[in-house]
View 1: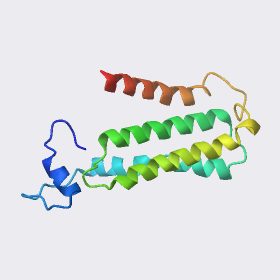
View 2: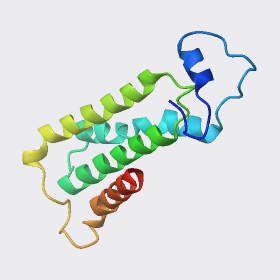
View 3: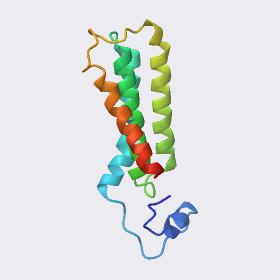
View 4: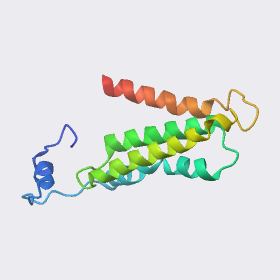
Length: 140
């Protein structure tokens, strides 16, 4: 519900519909941007899954991993005291729909749009490494 270094009583009261005493100031713009923009990183993959004829497997995996990373970052850094929970649920739904739409085309997709080289594998490797690193840091 909140960062661990902040008190959460006012957040709980707001969720119950009770006005909070003292009028806590709103979250910084960075938290609002994370909470509103990052959950919808899957929109690019959703659009590509339906509209891009030359879509390849490496770009689908890369886009899905980036969208999952941004969704996870939004969950950790978003201003959830000011943003309704349905925004988070909608972002998860967009990513799930985008992944499902891309998987329906998976058998017909080539591995790469051009000849696969080491640099074409960097596209999915970077977000995968960041996801693993972020998970390890959070697990500690």
